[in-house]
Image (cartoon, rainbow, N blue to C red):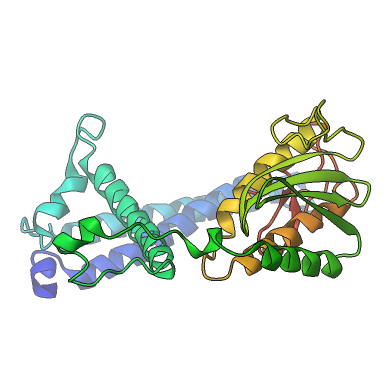
Length: 311
């Protein structure tokens, strides 16, 4: 294939032509440098003019000489062969009307999209393998239609186990108080008070966190009938942002085999807001951006970022 690419091209002359181009550029640079420097200091005006004219003529002659050499070598380089070793794909970049038929750019975009698709498919495969969704050949038969639906193990844990997990998490964080309510039987609702910064209502089904509402420390979290208000949003934009980020965190922390680890990880992430108004953004270093503090916390490092700085 290398021989096919070299047909009709004198590689030695091509290398000399590149050196000639570099020499020509250097000669032109010296011409402009001499014009920029002007006449150097001499004892008399006549001496300065004479030296300047002499140097300028020498530089012009050097440019002319290098240009002639480049033209001579260009005739020796030759023309490349008409055959293209890349076959049809090598012709895409030669389209003279790029705006009307942008095949080459579309090919590159498709390649990038294919790489992203492969990456996300790998992530999806790992998540599906964690949930043990593999089925045997017998289960995929006709009897699989009559098989009763199995409930996930995270939804049938005993309430005593849930209470024990919540109490252990409460002992881990002294600056975070957790109150547990069961307004509708076995389902638990947590009222998390983080210092004097915020209050979070965490609605759970067994150890599965269903939703989270974050409000300010001074806001009322109870409805008119005395029950926890699990629907109303905060009156402050900063805590509305934190609520949105908490919903994103619920989608991030997913480990069905160990639900207690998921709850502990989420509470650790929520506790990182203990200095919501005292921590600057790790990207821009500012405390406020558009009137809001850094409301985003990294899921791995728990560092603070503004919503626009995290991207």
